[in-house]
Length: 155
Image 1 (tube, helix red, strand yellow):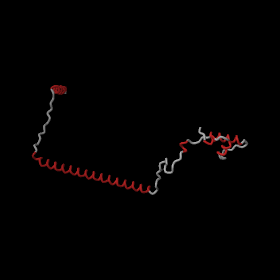
Image 2 (cartoon, helix red, strand yellow):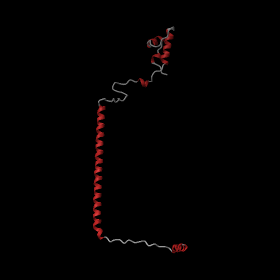
Image 3 (cartoon, helix red, strand yellow):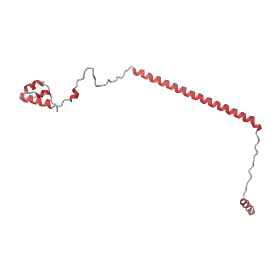
Image 4 (cartoon, helix red, strand yellow):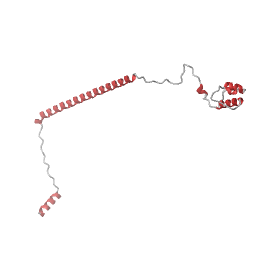
């Protein structure tokens, strides 16, 4: 518990003068008892720590400055974000249009190559040898022949 320097006064009269009349009221007591009670209560009351009683010079501040939103910049920031969104959308649209154009070019090239290949095949078609159509001979094993003969014999 901390004590104030005024509590170390030697006589009660000096301590009474040191403490102004305030919330401490002692009615029906002698002046000496009142002064002693005032000394006690002032010494016993809790004071803030010394660190919190430090006095700062005018130029120094322990708090960081607080950023206050400026009302005029809010619509501007909305406009800026809207503009950036429009720019991004237009860039994406350009990109997709370029991809679509490239895709169309590739499809057109593939069609051209296909037509050229078909023309070459039509030119070479009369000169191709005609393939023989082989009829698959039925290979019947001897056991199957025997089975067929037995079936015929039963009829």
